[in-house]
Length: 628
Image 1 (cartoon, one colour):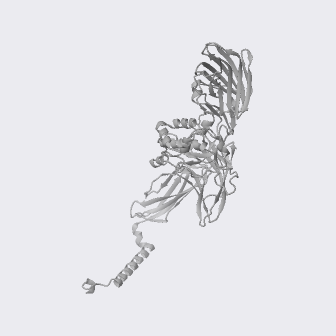
Image 2 (cartoon, rainbow, N blue to C red):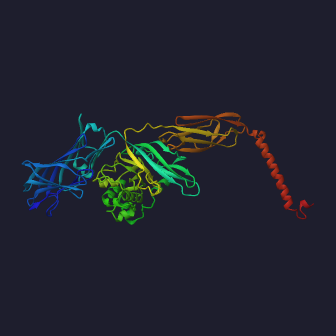
Image 3 (cartoon, rainbow, N blue to C red):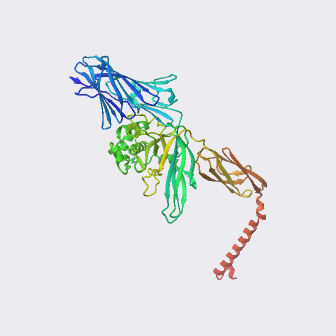
C-alpha cells in the first residue's frame, strides 16, 4: 500500500509550510522523520538550505515513495534532492501564490524500522533581509507533530552582519569565527516559536510628514495634529515644524499634539521633518506607574473594544496573561488579503472579529487583543503608525489613513515593570508563527497611541485636503544616524517688584523647550530663601516635547510681618538657572503705600454713599430712634 509520510513545519517568515501528505488514511506516528537543517546565509542575504532527513517506517503495512513540500507566499530555486543511490526526481510548481516541491524516492521504505536517509536542498532570497542598518533572519516555528522525531536547526550568518541585537529564542549553542556566526536550535525551541535574529547596533528612520488643516467655521478655533511621540520604543528628534505651533501638549495617552489657532476660513499646510531611533524592546520607562484613574481608563469599553461581548468575556475568563491572549488571537484570526482590494478598508472591531475570524486585517487583530485584555483586567491600548515591510504577504499593512498612505496598527499592554509593551499579533499570524510577543522588531514607528479614545487622535496621513486623499503625505526612509539631540530650554519667572511681609504673592514660571528632543523627567526647583513656598517644590515636569511650553504658578509668603530685605529668588531647571530679586517690606508699609491711601479714600466714599442712599430710600418709622 502506498503512503506519503506526513510532517508539518515552517521554514520561512512567510507561510513556508513543509507538508508530506497522505494518499491513504492512516494513524499519526506510523512514520518518524528526523531532521537536521542547515541554513547558510550569504553576504548578500541569499540563503542556502540543506535538509538532511532520515525517514523511518514504524509499520509493516505501509511504505513511503514520495515527499511533497508546500511553500506559501514565496518562491525558491536550485531545488535538488538525493539519497545514497543518487539524485531523486523533483517537480516544482508555483500556483496561487504557493510553491509545491514534489520529490519521488528512488527506493521505497518497506518494512518496520527501515530507514531512508536523504537530503533536500534549495535556496531562498527571503530568509534573510536587510532593513536599513539591521539584518533580519526569520525562521518560523515547526508544527508539533507526532511524526517528527529529532529536529535540529543550525544557522550560519556572516560576521559582517554585525552583533546580535536580539535572538528569540536564545540559541542552545553559539559559536563565532572571523567569518561566520553559528547558532543551534533544538526541536522544543522550534515547535514553541520560530527563530528570529536581528543583527546590528541601531535602526534610524528620517521622516517628512505633511498635514493639512482647514477651519471652515465663522469663528477662530484651535486645531491639533499628532506628531510622532517619544515612548519606550523610540527616541524622536524634530528638525523642524513649519509653521511653528502655538504649543505642543502631551495628552493623557502620551501623544504629542501640536496646536494651531486658525482664523475663520483659514487653512494651513504644516510640514514636520525629523528622525527617530527605533528599538525592538522597551529601552526605558518614560511614564509613571498607572494611577487608579489611568488604569480604569485603559480597562473600560470603547467603540470597537466591546469588553462586554459574551465571546470576549468568555475568552477573558480563560486567558489570564498577555501571552495567552496573544497566542489565541494569532491562531484564531486569519488575515483576509481580499479586504485590501476595497476602496476603503473599514474597521469592524473586536465583536465582529470574534464572530468572523477569517475576515480580519491588522485592525481586527489589534481590537480583539485589546478587548480581551481589558475584559481580563489587563490595561491595553492601540498603536498606529508606520511599519516597514519588504514583503506584504508576510508582514502586511492594512490601515489606510487615507488611500495614499498605508499604515499599520498593533496593540500594547501595561506591565508594571516595563510600562507599555508593544506586540504585533497580525504579523505573528501572517509570518508563519514568528514571535512578535517577546520582541517587536526595528521596523515599527509609533505615530499615535489610543487608550482613552479608540478613534482619536488621528495619525499622520489622515490630515488631507478634500479631493487630495490619494496624495501621499507620509514619507519615511532609512537614515544612518540619529541627529545629535539638542536639549535646550528657556526658563523665566515673573515676580512682583515688592512683597508685603506676611501677605501672599504669586510667582509665575514659564518653561519652553527650544531644542529638538524631548526633555524627560527634569526637576523644576524654586529656591526662595526667607520666602515661604506654599506650593509643591521641586516639581517633576515629566515629558516636555520640542516646541512645547508650560506655565506653572507658585504661591509664596514671607515667614514674618516685619521683614525688610531684598531677597534673591533662584529658579533652576536641569542645567539652566536664573535669579531675580524681590524687595520684601514690613506689613506697616501698607499705611505709606499710595495704593493703601487710595483704598481708604475709596472705602470712605463707598460708606458715605451707602449711608446717603439708605437714608433716602428707608424713611424712619414713627417711634424709632431716628424719628425723635
